[in-house]
Image 1: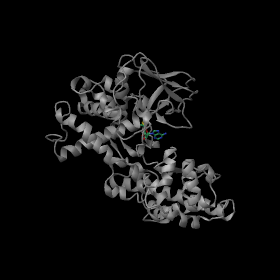
Image 2: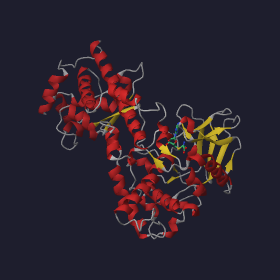
Image 3: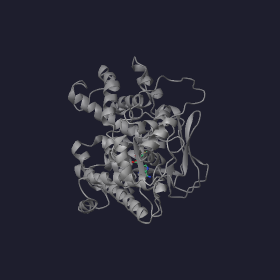
Image 4: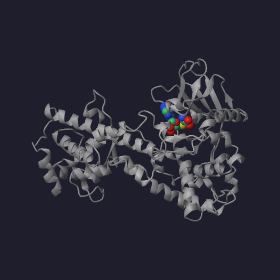
Length: 480
Ligand SMILES: C[S@@+](CC[C@H](N)C(=O)[O-])C[C@H]1O[C@@H](n2cnc3c(N)ncnc32)[C@H](O)[C@@H]1O
């Protein structure tokens, strides 16, 4: 995954790690167990990571970071230098502003050695040009970038503060200010780098128990409206240099009164990588940072589904069937379908919300009227009608891609070197990433279509009770 990040000054990678550890340990209250080491894992595409030097017992403390060392609004001088209440910007934007301030202070910042081990460039979609995004073709992840909204938040909330305080936020790259178009573009670029760092590295920080301050209105979030995103966020040195692995996780961060403590939750063998459990207090669990999780997930948008079902649009207000689901909190704007494992059935992999949507869209007008009058959505079911609709949706999605799966396989194998995206730079690198994403999605689509075909041919899909098939229901649906 670190293939989507770029580290600063790669030849000094190890030196930066050493300086970071030296800086970290020189801060009062920091404890780092000598049994661990900050390792260079670039050869496996994992950037930096933490590894056990010797065997570590379950429950052993790996390191402890005082709360005062976290990059957070509470700990930055910025709070006292601005007339406005920084926290009122909300957890995302307030941390973004603080990070911008600290980053622009360069060596003057108390966190300078920490900034030097953080990536300075990202290949997340937020940074892709229009032409690069086009390479993703019909990929639904393009819909999820949210760049416009994020730009607007930065322009509305961050830019006025930055522009009004040039002494605190000095213009970069020889710019006179952040006022004109060039200044705005530079500010947006930097703010998105900070936003991407927060997405991938920051933790939700629980308040220490005796901290009574309840903060302000946190509504203004950077790129998410998730309700449990309201805890303040902070960058926790070293804790965020652990990679994550759901299956191999062997460490967890505990938020104590004065410190954040990483502990082994299993015995760890010498040489083993130490993986954080992002479960309980994860790095920000927000809208995913649109990392390129190629070959993993397929996201169908509500719009795709409605189009294939013959609805004129996917506006909840004008579509009673969607309204019924929305009222019961059963409507999503997109549905993630995992790549089916060899033994998986449709029932295993289709999200229940998608099945209930398919069920609702395939109800006859009479059935729907009944449901509507009782204000009761149908139970999710997967018979020949829903399967027929799903087949149509997947086929129409497949047709939206400009190239076929086979063409993509050939294109990808023509890109050298085959398994090392790091070795490609600039546009070629993103071109390869885009190819991998769309190819992965096409493979998932093909697998799903094959599953539907096989279920249809082996008769395992029931007909609906009144014997209607999908097409005849579709005709009726179009009239509702
Ligand atoms: C919290 S940072 C972890 C430290 C990071 N490896 C570094 O060098 O700065 C999270 C980032 O590390 C990478 N990462 C996390 N878990 C990973 C894993 N299991 N394998 C590879 N990369 C991983 C991803 O790029 C992710 O955005």
